[in-house]
Length: 379
Image (tube, rainbow, N blue to C red; front, side, top):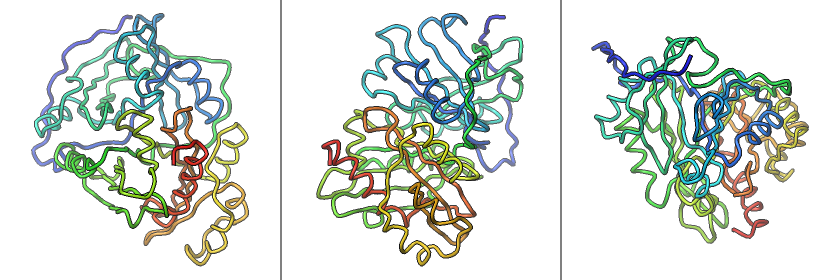
């Protein structure tokens, strides 16, 4: 049955509801890429995602092709233009492969759009109902930094594989998963002087709050620095750190990103795992490249973070970082950029109680990033 689009019915939110934008988590992350078929193969092979759904010319979509892939509660959508001279093709030409949409699950996509636009959010998509034989899905959206958008996805009345307009994608090639579970957070890079305006946007338009702040003294090396503020929604299910360059002797990683991405955008996506040693070991076997940390980092690790459950040797061998806060500790590691432009990369993170973002690792991490920048001639 072809997809039908109708105007959704407006729902009345309970008057006693305190959070005007209740979010249930990240629904999916959509990338605009130069070749979605090949990108899907890469993410399946390297990261262990599974085939989920497809839309394109064969399903009635003439201007683009999209491949949805999944691993546990992580869903990625890889979209490519079929023809030139359209917004998707223009996006890829300007930015290379990059994140276009951070889609958030909501109970009421109409209310989400109404509440955010009346608070100053710029509409990207008015509430729209998509339907097919498996039910209906309502989606809406607003613009945020750069060309990134937030989509609000209401799927309680949809029973299909992914969403109307897509068909189930079955493939004989499905490499085993690697233990990735869900999106922990997504980090955005914005231009000089733009961090606080976007912090205010998330506070005013989306009802988020600033839960952590890092200045150029927290995040700096001998050569470069940046500032960052972590924004979180009310229940903590969605977190968006926002980075801004700071003055340094040389070009910071954020400046390099802004130059090669040609604008503001998503810098990295942090994906959670329950066993980081097992996950990273498997990812390395599949060819995923990670930033390398000097072995001296581990000489003082026990004194700095105290007791941890993990054996230090595998952490040292893989280059996994450890940091502690008042509620526990976390383990994290960062990939190198996953395309030739030095832009988007991924973080693999395992939380053992910690709610923070690895402040104690910033120096080691940034020095590793600077070594990569220097190798590219961009430091």
